[in-house]
Image 1: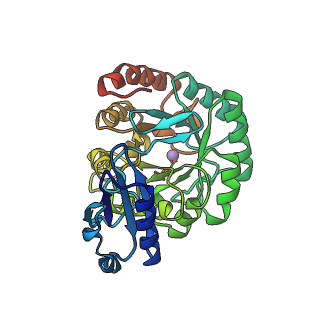
Image 2: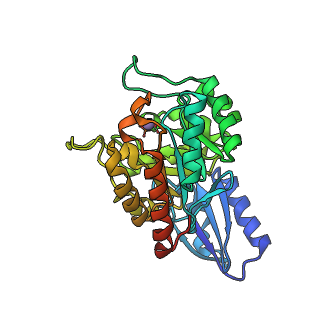
Image 3: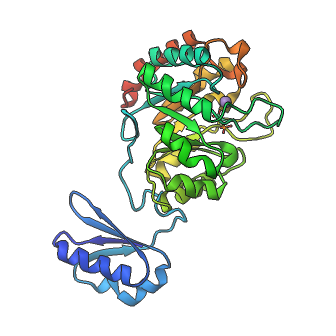
Length: 337
Ligand code: PEP
Ligand code: MN
């Protein structure tokens, strides 16, 4: 339920209503705005009827929260949430470039790729230490050693790092090494993992599952917020369709829909979204034009030797060129890199 207070309601009246909401077993939310205070009540809204809030002299209006994802929805939270990874900001007009190789392979590979990412204007370095691979025979990542290497290289080049966590048991370890955690497409509905990343004080990049509807993605994000972590970045990374010309079908219409329905920042991953190097730059620019708050791009210093996702990894000079195009384009769209 959304309860809009009258302008004359003072703190005592607000506290009185918050206490009444809590006493009914609902979770009270307090959202002071510049003109009015808005309160929220999460839980079984039917019990609120007993409070007759409409009749309260300090209440202007009461309306139900219709969306099933109540914390993630814009209804209760009209302003953009800005999520920070290190010094990089996502949302509220701030655009962030996240780049790096698909996986941590070796120190020299990671360092060279990280330098390429930084030179192109990336604000966050990304590489996987744990790789969820379709085949059990594919490179699975270097695990804890990869995490240590990633943190070291991030420090060396001066970039915060984000990396994927694939198991609940690893959340704490990954959170001690990384500035942000990634939940991958294959784990978008791993509810135990969502709850676990919801209980750490690190931002989460949540990727859309390959067969997930927009609503499924928002409900997955709701798990993380409900567990106490509101620092969530949504990531459109393509879905499975009948089309086989690309690895996935990058659903760019999801970007403005997500932005409309939710206050959380949205980034686009055109690398997994297309699977084809030459399509990454045009779809990255299209993602920015569609309203994304950032991009997540795979870059590799030598894609031909990459242990994963070489065919979709940009060469360093391609990322550099993309960075320049974004720099020119974003101000026109009212955003800055
Ligand atoms: C990745 O980011 O390298 C990855 C495995 O992505 P996704 O979960 O989107 O497939
Ligand atoms: Mn990858």
